[in-house]
Amino acid sequence: MAIGPRIVASGGFDMLYREGMVLIEEVASYLDGDGRAESRGLPREASFLYASESMRLTTRLMQLASWLLLQRAVNEGELTAENARTEKEKVRFSATPSDRGGPGYGELPQRLLEFIAKGDRLFDRVQQFDKLERGGVPEYAPSAEGGIADQLARLKAAFGRLKE
Image 1 (cartoon, helix red, strand yellow):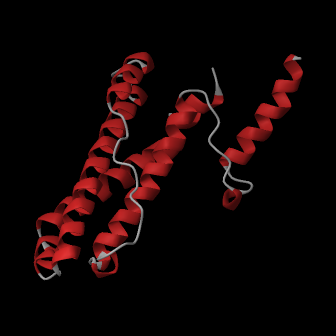
Image 2: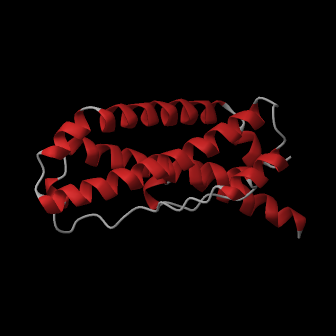
């Protein structure tokens, strides 16, 4: 068995799952409550941007929730990895991060901006877990030197030489 799927099935996934579900609940609560009130006071340009960014964030979080729920079902033995992979293929991460900035961006509520940033980080982490689950090695991030991607790349390099 490859190391990637084992990592995905470990406690690291449980923490990612909990953080993801908490973020989804927090964002839903914010958008239905304080966010709605904050958006009413925005200038027109910022109001349109708020609507599009909140829609993009909601879409992305629902896609992430689907991935997290499918992976949890695999980890708990309710679904085979192959069946989950088929279902995951149906859920493309289409709500890509938007270009930050532009007219009205600086006027968006700070909490929305924080939720967007948290959603982006969750998205990146899920993508890394997805690569691991598929047997790949996450992309190397210079800021994560010594992190899991670096360690997996070193293992792959070391053990890859043994096959030759």
